Image 1 (cartoon, rainbow, N blue to C red):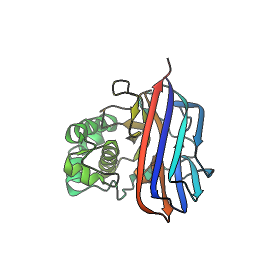
Image 2: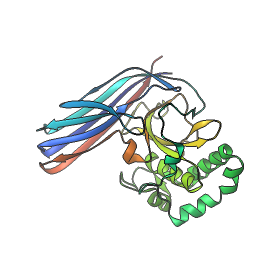
Image 3: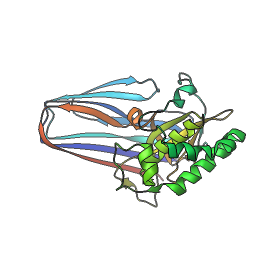
Length: 269
């Protein structure tokens, strides 16, 4: 599938700051499931490219005396290939054991640990089938709701509330999988879904778990499926904090900061 993607982030300051510094993980990388034909990031100020420990392509974005409206636009074209949601390890990948580490975002509550225990025997007997059953159970347990959680919510909070957005559900899956001794990573990216329209207020997020003799298998609890050729991954990490598309800080200024994010994904016929 040939996908045209535009990801636009706009900050509006009531009183403009004197300095802004951000890390941008807004560049997909070419792998078995996707090939980047062209990609560009338009942003005021300087951009410095580097790769983080997870192999993500990152840019440090620095602006002195930013305007009251600061826009960052990433756009390009990616050709995707159906791989049944499976990606083998790549040269330079961190050891899979790294992804057993819980974070403040994914750390399971007592209720999550008890829930995980119900799948321990199945995951031990057949990891792939057991993880698919786990995903299906989480899909039933956690409703998709954009109003009940925030960008700072944890997996434990979303699990207790029984609802959350894709970020929350990816955190819950990763936390529960790690509690079962299965390495799991958080994935940020995009999803082409013509039934929902091509423009959304944000990107998408899902999880991937390590299955011996296969590799990294993707699990999207929101849609209860593995990734298809409608998915484009941006970054991987332990959680949202290490894989977020845009993350940073500002110095100075006053008043409120407004943020608008829009994502457009279109399939080229």
